[in-house]
Amino acid sequence: MATTYLPTRESQLLSFSQNMSDKLVADPAGFGLDAADATAYQATQQAFAAAYALLQVPETRTSPNVADKNTKKKALIDHTRSLVKIMQAWPDMTNFKRKELQITVPDVEPSPVPVPKTMPRITILSTLGRTVHFKVNDVDETRRGKPPEVAAAMIYRWIGENPPSDLGQWHFEGATTTAKQTLTVPADTPAGSQLAITALWVNNKMQPGPACQPVILNVAGGGVSKAA
Image 1 (cartoon, rainbow, N blue to C red):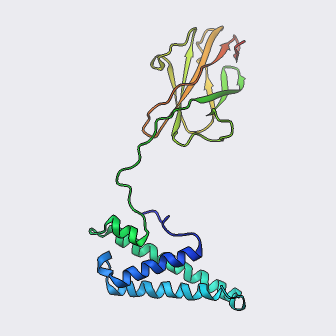
Image 2 (cartoon, helix red, strand yellow):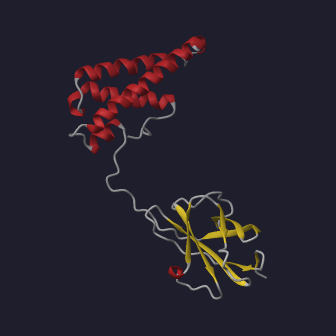
């Protein structure tokens, strides 16, 4: 269970844990716990609250008191996570109770994964013999990685004139999650042939977005070169 419900600021952690302590002490059974659990958590919360209060006064904001506060903060966080794990697994736990405690409410209906709407951009980095080094990245040059909804890029090649619009007729090179790629033209490809490379984004359900405009290269006698 994720623990992102825990506030990062200590002042917010103080109020969060105070609320949880009050709820548990008032009705421990209503959250799947017993009175001993609630009393123990209250003691842990009050210990952190007292240590935190000392640091709000300049005269008592000393290194030993800071260290003591950090120790009690860790104990509070660990205790909170332990109890929340128990409460989240309690069969009678409800989302209303979770909201009362300000803890994670499970996403029982995950948000739909959007189909990629943009196409990638292919940039040729270099050619060496029959090997092409290129990069597949977002058309948005300000973004270093893939778009948020993208899981991978699918790479395709076509050798010959007039690349078909149906990618099912292309040769599928593979899927990749990294930008820099290498493609080697088959050794039996006749010199003078045309090489086309295209790519498209897919989400984590393998639903594809639009394919980019193919990059065209020429297969010469000794290697590959950019088309004129």
